[in-house]
Amino acid sequence: MNTVLLIARRELGAYLRTMSGYIIIAVLLFLDGLAFNAFAVAGTAKRSSEVLADFFFWTSGIGMAGAVFLSMRLIAEERQTGTVQLLYSSPVHDREIVIGKFLAALAFLCLFFLGTAYMPILVAVYGKISLGHVVSGYVGLILVGAASLAVGLFGSALTKSQVVAAVSSGVMCVALTMCWIVAKVVDRPFTDVVTGLAWYGHFEPFRQGLVHMKHSVYFGLVTFVALFAATRVLEARRWR
Amino acid sequence: MIQVDGLNKYYGEHAAIRGLSFTIQSGEVVGFLGLNGAGKTTTLKVLGCVLLPTSGRVIVDGFDVTRDPHEIRKRIGYLPDTPPVYDEMTVGGYLAFVARLRGVADANVAPYVAEAEKKTAISDKHDDVINTLSHGYRQRVGLAQALVHKPKLLILDEPTGGLDPVQIVEMREVIKGLKGEHTVLVSSHILGEISQVCDRYLVIQGGELIAQGTETELSEKLGSGGPIEIDCLGAAGPTIELLKKIDGVVDITVAKLEGQNLSLHIDAKGDVRPALVKALVQADIAVLRVDRAAHRLENIFLKLTHGKDA
Image (cartoon, rainbow over all chains, first blue to last red; front, side, top):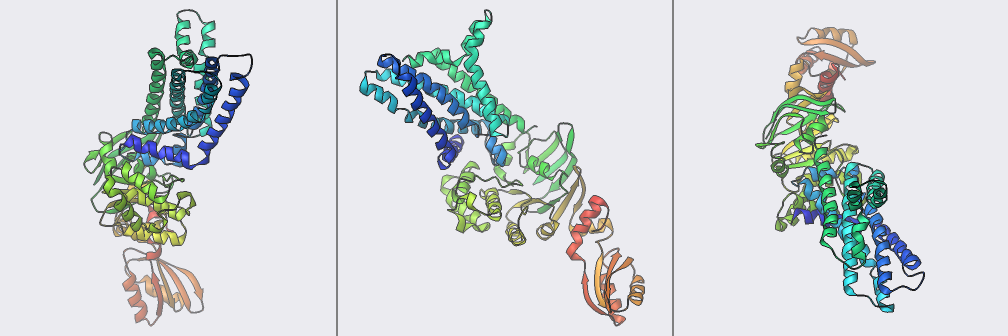
């Protein structure tokens, strides 16, 4: 069996065999349901597509927070318990470890996204939405989730402590979120650069039902850079 | 099987290993002795391709650890000081995962796992979840993962660490059973176990190799195998005078004297036990016990590392 899939399968098994993953998903679903009820469907009369866009807005933020918590254990726990030595002494490349763990966490995060599907269904029952809008929104959510998990995995590779990993990943994700505020106080040409770094601007078209290649590339690039950095950190640990 | 030449490993400014050189032949069971912080674990991590050396050359089965670590990893089984087990997995599931990770073909996984479980006497724990196992069984599962893919070289870092006396005996038997099939490098500071499973020893201190050889070679190198203990029935003065005349006897001290029951500690060069017994019997002194082996390796070890007897 391919080594990446082997590691991914074991990692996914670890999420499914322990309570922590289920608890994180349950809490996320609760918060997402709450946000949907309180903000997405509440207020003045809205069109179904607006409700759906608001649902994707809140789910993306909650999904990002969930990704930080799901990814904090990926490498940090292995170093804490010493099981990383099993991987280090096996004929496995560091990139295979990183990608395997990333895929497992992404698959588990998709379970959360799957659990949110009842909300668009409710909107469809009481209103009218296009399937394309739903698909576009969920593609956006998966891209945001993948980028957040990759950043979280990088944070997890930096330390033995899961708490420190969660905090450092959280800070990085918040920094990517807050770039649009920074963009307001810097001059050109930095405004464009900083604005381009903010993830939310790239998610906006997805939640409105549009899939753009350039925005997909942004999330792909963040994911790649973070996974590459995590791989480098693992490699560097052998030289420490 | 292993060639280490001028190995150095630094953690920042601190040198964990300095100029370490040694060779291990295929099929040998070699004990790696040293106090805590001597550099044993770091050396084993370098051999296990977990850490890369700062400088020096390390060749395992013809492959260099810095150039071909992947090839070496296929040929070794490594048990760190803490067994690298995933608590939530079953023993069988974990061993199957490790076997696949180390390149065992799917068709061979089940028989290889069964064989590793049999060798480490954990067959009855196949379906148990690892976090329900005792420390001794976790250690055995750790050993099973190291040998599940039938590696040429087994690197065992303190496999008896934290085990109770019964578990230590059981683990020792398991390691003895590996002789012949694998080259084994085993570290420990519980010297009693090492002395019963190893063909040869490497003694390390402060990151440097300070001695190597068989127990006899190390003993001869130091000129003494440690004190001989004799229990006999006789008067202290005449008995000591009699034994002092024997060639090789350096010093005699009375360890215990209760009536005619006399216990002596004798420092001697070489093995003078036959001469001691012969002299006592000829003088009609009953010999109750002659012993040296029990603390022999500890003595060698302490002399090498601290320059004193146990």
